Length: 353
Ligand code: PMP
Image (cartoon, rainbow, N blue to C red; front, side):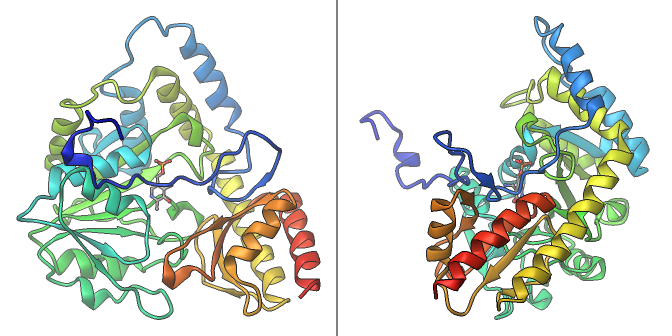
């Protein structure tokens, strides 16, 4: 820290993203990226947009908003596009949390929530998940705080039903409920259809996983027009040009290629079932994941040890150090070939125990 760094950030611990090593080629199953390239249309549109980069981008992401509104059966006033869904989440912490309305989220969830809370000087409370990592919905009724709930949750992979989400919304009519749907396209139910009925609902989604655009940085926030207006106030007070022209174009191409999206999601779900089955054979314990990752532990091998040994063998998975989940690893669902490399290495490692 330099001697100039503001005291207001002196105790801020930044988010630790998954490793992105450059020194060696890994089978990379640690950051929940898609193993599939972006759709051809996304790449072509981005290349065309690159020809006009001397101009500022469209601050309203007009084409994206119109396309998404048609696809989701909402109005374009119901959506705000952002630089990854992380930005949408940060905007939500800025717009809807303060000393009078702290944030609340599970003790085991997306690690960025406490960081955004600290960054925005927002107090926060963490509610423990049940022993089996499920959310106890009753804990979230009438909490009087802004709720952040990843559905499905990360890194557990477990989803709440839409009726449980609705119960949380109905149980907190005077505070915002942010439903982070980064992984919703892999089998869970989206809450987008509820935005007309609940003016306290904000849904965030991303193009990083199911639409293969993690490097493009495109996310969105969906909610009633008033909430979206509030988020726009934050956006226009920080970075009006938050989604660059190439990313807007790539996002449009991805939305126009719905068949490719559906095929890739179906493949990931099939591969998830295969990976889960194969991991359970030698005794791994898994959660019921509805995401593009599995969350697993083995009774005989420490989570960190497995992570390290796989890394030495050229396979990257994600290990967390939080006490409750230190025995677990999160493994991104890759292609069948990547999964087989992972499984062969795991077999070799387990054989030595
Ligand atoms: N929410 C959750 C639960 C995530 O795991 C991630 C990915 N790290 C995000 C949001 C943010 O993804 P992005 O900013 O790439 O849209």
